[in-house]
Amino acid sequence: MPDIEQIEEAAARLDGVSVRTPLLRNADLDQAAGGSVLVKPECLQVTGSFKIRGAYNLMRQLGTGEAKNGVVAWSSGNHAQGVAAAGAMLGIPSSIVMPEDAPRAKLDNTRRLGGEVITYDRYAGDREAIARELAARRGAALVPSFDHPHIIAGQGTVGLEIAADAVALQCVPDQVLIPCGGGGLSSGSAVALKSRLPDVAVFVVEPADFDDTARSFASGNRVSVDGSARSICDALQTSMPGKLTFPIIQALVSGVLTVTDAEVRAAMRFAFRHLKLVVEPGGAVALAAILSGKIDTAGKTTAIVLSGGNVDVELFAEIQTEPN
Image 1 (cartoon, helix red, strand yellow):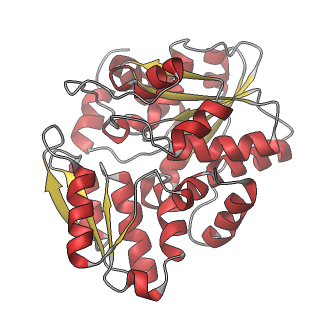
Image 2 (cartoon, one colour; image 1 turned 180 degrees about the vertical axis):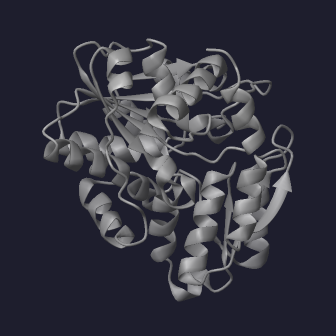
């Protein structure tokens, strides 16, 4: 388990690289929650999601010999952009295995940032196996999307910032809701939050059809989702919690919440209309949990992470024109 010192070291590496996104307040959201809500908008982060934090933290620590043949990663899109951006900053060539049906914005941005994109069939291929074979053939270093101590520590800087900024605002949260795919963001942030705010309750949120963390949390063992599972939340379509991330979630998280695609779409509309923020489906799950009443927020202070804002224009426009 990465400790608070490793997360603080990651924060030092990221100084001047990642954006220290603010904690926002909104009267309409407070009214809907019946309490106070602090919003951490990682949709405003470099490359549009929190992923630059972990990718840069790992790649910054690669030795010259490790990085001489570049890096290889696998990603649904946000980690891909983080790896490509970090590679451009550090002068390390990057190749990323991505689903062929990933949002066009994520594919295009990864290429624009200098990453080589290798596509695969999300529902028939094994992206990790493809990436590992490619890395072995090229002699390249691997940059996992979540299951690595340096990735977890880098993502944990989100929780570190929430804790520090909430204290500075004199608005310490009773609970924090964090989107969860493989668990890098939620596990790392839980370490930071519980280290700084021992009494805070941390909840992770995932799509209802990709509830591997919820079912794993309930059973005590890692389990995977059915191969037929589908969700609008492309960033959170991980089939099983990580070997490293899940024990941290087991130890530090108070519960796992799930939200439907319809609830996510409503949250995206709320974010745009009231918060004036563009949030992608996977990035909106924590907000969806509040708006759909999946957790008691009345009379409490709740912090949430909006983890990304990389969504295709066409899908975003379609969702915004739907009735509430």
